[in-house]
Structures are given as C-alpha cells and as structure tokens.
Image (cartoon, protein in one colour):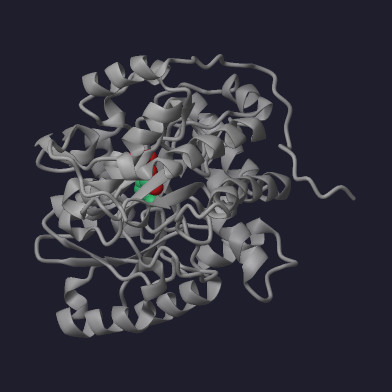
Length: 457
Ligand SMILES: Cc1ncc(COP(=O)(O)O)c(C=O)c1O
C-alpha cells in the first residue's frame, strides 16, 4: 500500500485567498498596531490564527443543517444533538452554549467562589480568565516535561499527580471545588494527556471527593494520540478511547468549534442533577433556553454530525500526520518548536528562536508579526503577551484549521518560516502602548522597540 497520507476528502466549494505585497503588509500591520488579531482577514493569505471555528464542514453537516428545527423549546435538533453528544461523552446532562467560554463561565459561576483554587494541567486563556473572574485562583500543574519545549515525551499534557496531591493537602479540599484536565493541552503545545494519567487524576479526585471535569475541546485528537502512543490502545477505536476517558470524569466543558467540527457552538456536561439545574437557570438568564443555549437549531445539527466525524480514523490519521508534517519539516532545518508537534497546531519556541529578545519585549509577538510580513501568514502569540508574568514559555502557535488547507499550502508555510529563521537576527522586540485589564492580547497595541537590538553572535 502507498505510504503517502492524503487529504481524505475532495473539495466541492472553494474560497479564493488574496495575495498582498510586502509594502502593503507593512502598512496593514502598522494600522493593526502590530497585533494580528486587529488585521482584516482578507489581508491574510494563510490564516493559522486558530483552529477554532475555522474548519470546513462536510456534505453530511451541510445536509443536516437543512434539517434544523428552529423551535424555541423542545426542538428535534436538540434531541439529535444531545443523543450524539451522550453517545460519545456519556454524561447525564448536556447543556448547549454558544461556545466553550460560555460553558466555562456558567460552570465556574456555579461551582466556584472567591478564595477557591482550580487546578488544571494548563488553563487556556479563557478558562484562566473565567476562573479569575469569579475570584478563584487558576493553578497550572502540568508535568515538568510539559514546560520544556524541547523535551520529548509522548504525553506532555499530563497532570503532575504528586503536585496535585500536595496542592490539595496544602490548601484543603474544601477550597478546591473541581479539578480540570484539558485534552489536548492547548497552551502547553497541543500535547495529549494519557489514559493512565486521567485514571490517576480521577482516582485522586475521588479519594478527596473533588469532581473532575474535562476541558474536552480536542478530545478526538487526544484519543488518537492515545491509540498511537499508549500501550494497550492500538486496537481500540478513537470512540472507545474517548468513552473510557470521559468515564473518569464528572462532566466537561466543550468548544464545538474544535473537535465538534462546527463553526460555532459548545456545551457543558455534568452528571450532577443539582448543579445541572443551577447551570440551566443561569443559561436561561444569559444564553438562552436549555434546548438551544444561544445556538440555532441548525448549529446543533452541525455539531451532532461533527462530533462523530471528528472520531473517524481516516480523518484523524490525516489530521495528526499533516500537523506533524509541518512541524517535522521546519524542525529538520533547526527551527525550535515544541516537541513533538501537537495535534491541532505547531508551536514555535520564540524564546529559542529569538534569544536576543527578552520576554518583556514579547518575542512571540515579534515573531508572529515577522511571519505575517514575510509571507502573509497569521499565527498567534501564546506567551507573555497572553498570560503576563504567569507565562512559562513564549510560543507562537500555528493553528491548523480542520479540512481547509492542502499540503501545498503547508509547503508554502514551511518555506516562509525557513526564510524568517534565516533572517532572525534582524527581528526586533515589541513594547505595549495599550492593554485591556483582562485577556489583553486580543486588543493590545504594540510597536517595535526603538533602540537597535543586540545582534546574535
Ligand atoms: C483548551 C481550550 N479551552 C477553551 C477554549 C474556549 O473555547 P471558545 O473559543 O469556543 O470559547 C479554547 C478555545 O480556543 C481552548 O483551546
């Protein structure tokens, strides 16, 4: 059998992308205050800002959309959505939300109060912000390998179980309303969590009577990594693996914009009847009635089909291989990346890429700006700009939208990154000219630092 892994789909509808010149991009970047979130999407050639909500839907999803039942209450689309989600996740209550952060806000508002502590392998930006918004403390407890970009480990997203137990003993179980496990670990390089680790974390949580929730955004990619890397799982289907994983928890938050293969949507699941009631009451106040939760019936249909498609093996094989293709091609030329490549993204290690730029001068933001200038590629900084002093790494994430770009697009991205790598000594740090009080990276304004930077020797 041929070894080349091809895109397991053919293209039915195309969307043109627009070339720009370097002088144009310089102008666009200045107008966007060197923050790629502030660019117009049409001025971007290859958009790797995020894999969230940017995927292409399948013919089955578009067909399902036509079946959308837009009734305010009790719609058939909600039944199909709940049945499909329960078929994979297995939790008693499924509460739709307009996206993942709405599920987070409701979960933390109901479960947490000021002074509480929420451990996670690594909180994502919105998760951390929503924990902190209710006055609780977000603590990241990923294993030490997960904090070192070049360290190679099959499950760098794992929680440090001993550190978790020390934290529970130090602050007391009463102050920890829940523990979270993010699969895969987005802020930590898109790295997976092993089944063994989930089992251990679950056992510890049960011992201390603390509920365990999954941040399940990329549950299908995590399942496939387990199939590839964890002994005993090679012959199991991704769905069987996902089932087992979720059986160790009490509920989850989910952004359906990732492994829900939809352009919008999310949900919150729980096995706890009392919490579910409180969550639905809050949902009605801010999102919508519990059979639509801020979504249209057609969105629920797209998610019902999408969560199942995300678990198809042909798709996952291509997905994981194509992300690795990008990571391995640039790493082979010496570009420092988080190793091994993640499931949904490749992360450039900006501190190692630009050692002449200190963290306070945002090496990740500087590198992301340069990738745009060089080739019209949009990426995102995950580091000091996003997390402030809590950042342990300065990364630039190249998030790969699902089923959108082909291998030649990725070959182009490789070429651009290698060109920037060659000229890395010319890149200057950045300084902030405006920042919002939270989630500052979305609206921050930056400019290059004035003084010439020290040249690398
Ligand atoms: C791990 C993780 N959790 C939560 C979220 C929030 O989801 P949403 O963007 O749908 O609000 C994201 C989104 O990027 C994520 O990657």
